[in-house]
Length: 134
Image 1 (cartoon, rainbow, N blue to C red):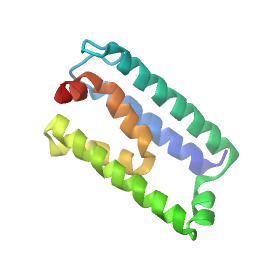
Image 2 (image 1 turned 90 degrees about the horizontal axis):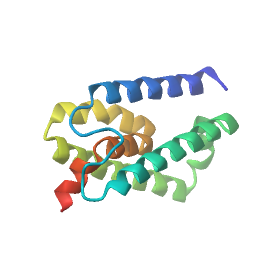
Image 3 (image 1 turned 30 degrees about the vertical axis):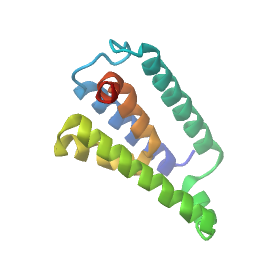
Image 4 (image 1 turned 135 degrees about the vertical axis):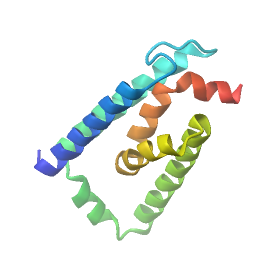
C-alpha cells in the first residue's frame, strides 16, 4: 500500500474520530426513534462499505483508475451524478443542523470520501434525520 493511500485512510480515521468525539445529541449506536432497526442497518452499510473501500485500495490505485476511465463519457457522467448526489446530501446536512459551520466541517470529507462521509453522518444522526420526515 502506498504512502498516498495510507495517507488518505489516516485522514479518514482522523475525520472519523473527530466527528465521533464532537457528536452531540442522539446516541451513536442505539436508536430512540420510531424505526430503530434503520440505525443499525445504516451502521452495517457504513462498516461494509468502508471495509470494501479499504480492500479495493489494497488492490488498485484510485488515482490511476480515475485517470484511466476519465476519458470515457460514462465515467464523467457517473462522476457528475455522484457529486450532484453529494450536493443533495450536504443540503440535507445543512437542513438537519441549521449551521453553516457544521456543513463546512463535513464539506471536505464529503468531497474527499464521498458516500463514506455521508453514511457516517447518516449513521450518527439517523433519528434526527428520520424525525424530519415523519
